[in-house]
Image (cartoon, rainbow, N blue to C red; front, top):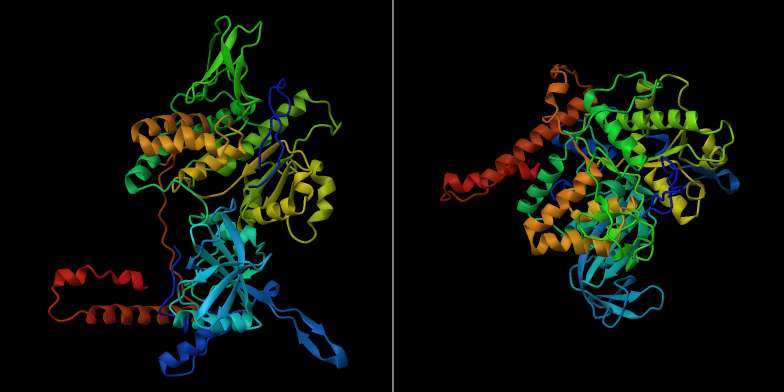
Length: 581
């Protein structure tokens, strides 16, 4: 997805949406940590008496839909689910003298060897080095998608009928093969949109199995994409850079809209000022740091052309030039970048800040644009995980005067009917999965021109610098929006010269991000209120709790007793039994 400034002469710019771009593995509990329905028989066996626990109600959306077959028979539709991914090593020379770096392959058993062949041409691609239960290749209910990479890594995605998920999980675990979450790359590449049920994933009490849409956002693909992995020291320095991107010099100058019914705190007013300033593309006298420094231009000389990405003779009749703080490029007119990253610590009201910006811009254009002509877009597209839709709707109800904002949700099977009414709304909420689907099918989201696009990810960007670079690409932060240039000026510099690389990164972060922590604005926050709530567990939950309590105690004792008697107490302490739970 890219944002594209539409009218340089306007005070504020429109943005067009173009393109999207540790789990706990259960190796001891596969017999009972499968699903609620399979858990209770184990409870009964362990307790020595029948377990009288009410079965949890299944959600309708996950139930198999019955169909009426011939002669009045009821035939139940089989549910296929994604069980997860396993990563195997392969021996392959397939990519030698080839440009591609990955290929979809089939797995075929040849005696005791698993052979790999490409799905399109059937060409030999290699063999699997590690143990893989070949019986899964012959089960009609199991479907296997496999992606072979140039690093000889074989990523195998396993699908099966929901009724056989536990059995397939047992077959894999008996062969010391354990399922992991699919990566975002795999979810998108194989268009995985079914239910996710990993029989090796420990679902703790009170939680649920994550869904593929959530995984596409929450987990980074560290296997299939080249990324600058950070050691602990560099990661700590990077966190320090982001945590010091404060607003100490910002004066709140933007008046909040009367559409808001919540009074903004001082630090939220500063966020509104910074965001509105960036959308108005103030490059001459911005309050927040800029990547471009303006100065009087000398006569003649050669300048960087932002359109052709090359240098050339400077334009005539130009008395100002702008120099990029990181690359040193000089240019007559800096590129438009009307976006930024609001990275405040959780709980400081980022959603409220974004809503205040939306209300402010609606007032701004109401006062400056002709009414009712519908020629210019005014709607903000907000892309969020599906689980966050109710939260956003609640925030809108809580913070905005009723009737002052028109909101629609573009999600689900009936969403196409909303497409023709996008411009009749001020905010359109959608999900990353819906966005991905519309991208693949050239859907309405990409046919519409949006005033603003908000990505609410809720994930940190400090695990990999590439995560940060991807956000700059979305914002079209020219000239660092291309990965090659970002790597040249930032990633590679950090690798070669840590201090110089982090210095440049700090300049970039200060110009693109706003992050406040609770400790940095503690004086603006009310004191915390600690309230203890005692909960009486339902018999169903009490039995589940007691089961995990007793099983955990048993595992701890067994782990302790596994040590020989001559091992010292210090040696015993090195065994972290918490990893078993």
